[in-house]
Length: 67
Image (tube, rainbow, N blue to C red; front, side, top):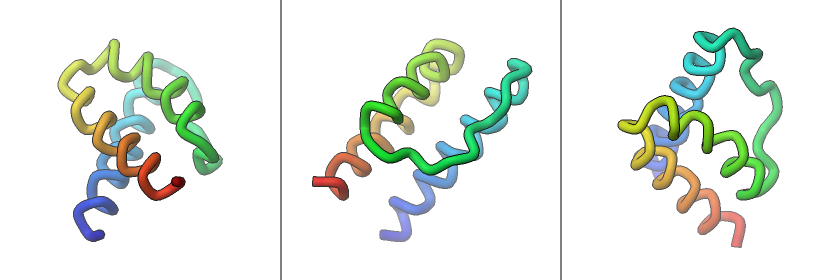
């Protein structure tokens, strides 16, 4: 579980930094479903290809916990 929290924290920190650097406001609410995660993650994946694996792992774990 600690690893999952670490992955989620890393993803959230990176997403916030990425959106701020692009001049956008970081999200203030919790993702409520996998569709929201995917919609938000697509531009981040495109801008930062090295994060694609991290975001995919986070989304997979989120889906597992939501099921």
